[in-house]
Amino acid sequence: MPHTLLRPAVLALALAGGGFAHASEEAVKKGIEAFLGAPAVQSVSRTPYGSLYEVVLKSGELVYTDAKASFIIDGRIIDAKTRADITQARLNQLSAIDFSTLPLDQAIKQVRGDGKRVLVTFEDPNCGYCKRLGKELSRMDNVTLYTFLYPILSPDSTQKSRHIWCAKDQAGAWNDWIVNGKTPAAADCDSSVVDSNVALGRKLRINGTPTMFLADGSRIGGYVPATELEKALDGVATK
Image 1 (cartoon, helix red, strand yellow):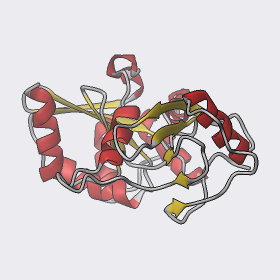
Image 2 (cartoon, helix red, strand yellow):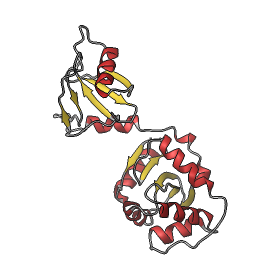
Image 3 (tube, rainbow, N blue to C red):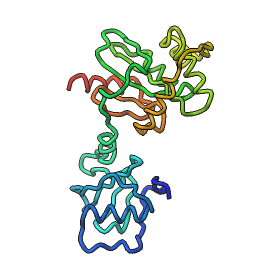
Image 4 (cartoon, rainbow, N blue to C red):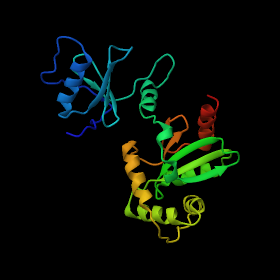
């Protein structure tokens, strides 16, 4: 059975032989892996709410269960008092990276204004939301952009990525395509960096585009309007 749990969002399932006499993180891990039929658990920790245990799967998913692993909650936990999405906050924490390890020489670099703020994006040239993001980014100033070409949608995405990487003006070719819809001219060079980017993205569990990273390593998944990106960038800059 694959690691990805089935929906609906709240899944209550009795586990055969899943009754444990004493609550423990190891017992929870064994119970969940018995249900999944695979060594899929990365970590288990008890939460301060609802007598629940947080279970982080190796796939990057986050689920909850009780001490006996007698049911699984596959969904979000919301703090009723503050209305904070506890699950999303935790996922953001878990998906953060060590920014210093990114091979920025494998990305297209653009410096706008003073370039003090830094944003890294992983983008597929045929991604519709990447094109929307491109228009938003074109209006931003005082930022350094690093665009990792990450073709995961089709062979045409890979071909376009190679042509853009091999262009004399990489940033110009990328912006002409992603913002203005001008097909990149055929160009040839050592474009193995595109393959390296795909391998890197898989290692970072990037399953969709655009995916962005701020200078503190925090991840932003999906399209975000410029106004929200400005807030996120300024938040990192003032830390």
